[in-house]
Structures are given as C-alpha cells and as structure tokens.
Image (tube, rainbow, N blue to C red; front, side):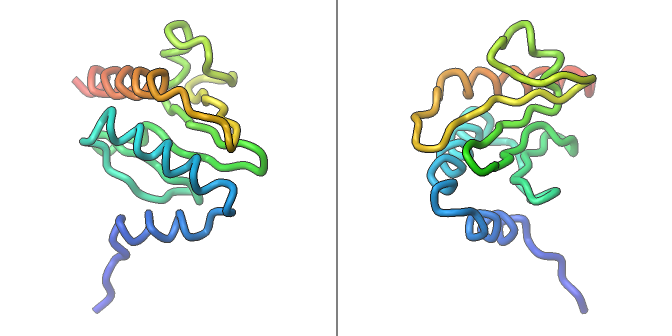
Length: 124
C-alpha cells in the first residue's frame, strides 16, 4: 500500500534543498509566519514552502539567488495597508527580503495576521 509523504517530511526536505545562504532567512521567515498564525498548515507546492489556511493557499516562501520573497496570495487586497508589498496583477504580491539582512519581524507578523484575517473573511 502506498503512503503519502507527510507534510512535515516535505517541509524538512524543503530546507535540506536550499542553498546554505538561503536557510537562515527561510527558517526565520517560517518562524515569524507561524508565530503570527500558528493555525496555518505547511506544505511544499511548486518547490516553495506554502502556508495554507482552511484549504486555501495564503502565503509562500519563494527563494531566489540573492533574496527571498514572502509571497502573499491575497496581497493585492492588502497593498494599500502594506505599501512594502511589490508586484502587479489580480492577486499576488510579495515582500522582498535580502539574505543576511535582518527581517522586519513586526511588519511580517502584521502582514501575516492581515492576510489570514482577510482569507477567513472571504470564506464566510
């Protein structure tokens, strides 16, 4: 009988596949996101660590060569409240984070909480 890979195993493997200079930023970002919204589920989708709220993709950590993005799937609706968000289009925005620079944990915490609140309101 086949078994699905458990999300915790996928998350551990995700961090194992990152370049050494990406790990600290990605882990710190994961901790801030889960600290702000511990109810979020984690999985790996499209090669990114994705946070899910009530079955919907909400946030993702997307790593690049020189920086990481905290991708916010409902970010367009939060762009006025959070002018630090970058990007264009119907829904997704991102917060750009350079490796080896400290995270603005307060900004990320507030952004995650607002994204979760908006996601929950849209479900009602």
